[in-house]
Each structure stands twice: as C-alpha cells, then as structure tokens.
Image (cartoon, rainbow, N blue to C red; front, side, top):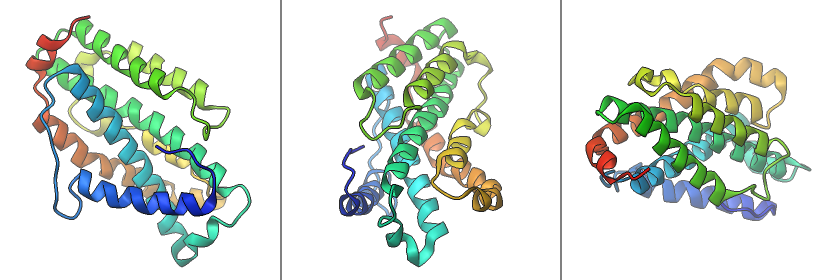
Length: 222
C-alpha cells in the first residue's frame, strides 16, 4: 500500500489499484492462483488478500455512497488523510480475520494446535514488523496492531470454524473508520457489514482450494 498524501495521486492510486486487483484476483476473468505449500506462501496469501479486501471494500463503499460526487471528496480538507488512516485500520482488521481463518484451516488439516499458533504468530509478527508504522496511519495504528497480535496469540485454533464466524473485525473496522458522517453510517451499517463478509467468500474458497496444510506443516520449522 503506497503512502503519498496528494489528492491527485490518491485518486490515480485508487484507479490503478482496482485495475491491478481485477488482474490479480480474477475479476474480469484473469485468475492467478498459486498453491500454498509453505509458511512464506501462506504469509503472502494472507497479507495480499487482506490488502485487497481492505482497499476494495473501503474505496467501494466510499464510491457507492458518494456517487457522482466521489471525485469531489478529494478536494475536501483532510479527507485524504482520513481515508488513508481508515485504509490501514481496515488492513489490520482484515489481516486479523484472515490469519484466524487460515490458522483454523491448518488445524483442521491435521497440524498440531501449538504448531499452528507458533506459525501464525511468527507470520503475523514478520508482516507487521516489515510494515512498521506507515506514514499515512493515525495515532491509533500501533494500538490496533497490538490488538491483532493479542488475538492471534489467544486464538483456540481447533475451535475456528470453516465459515464466516471469525470475520468480524473487518466489518466492524469499516463501520468505525470509514470517513462518513455518523448519521449516514447508522443507516448503512448493516449493509456495510454484510458487504465486507460477502467480499471474503471468494478469498475463503481460494484458500481452501490452494492450501496444502500437510506441506505447510512439514515446511515449518518453529
């Protein structure tokens, strides 16, 4: 996720990101899916899909809510800063949800629960440490990242279901952080939450199909 605050650049990045996403995740017919057979491939899958969900749900909601006035939002003082901060909170929440789901798949695939925990903590720590605190993030980013680490540390992996049950942080983050006035968000909240959950369906299908839990377990050295 890039980090430049200019309004023109922000608009072009959104357009460019969505074009890239169509190619990357198959929207528009072209699909690039690679098997997930080792911890680094799993980490890449989780991080990239979290970024995709974070940006497409946030920008998609903003575009839908604003309609034809969407470009005008970028001329409002402070809007780009709020949008960028929201993007990073959405990424953390999406990373949290998908990490839990991925760990649950590993546990159901026969990987011992303590090994699942060690792997998912290590992968998360590497991703967050590599990212650091982005220049576009707000003052709450570090605390939010700490909550994600705590969730992964405390997750009972054998109890994670193969459904949308663990995907609750990302819908809540969009409701909380999207730069929309509170009165409008109250009207939109149920639709927004359901939309985020819907976006996760393809990601869940992909990971179920691509993940080789036994190979990941064999490749993992804790």
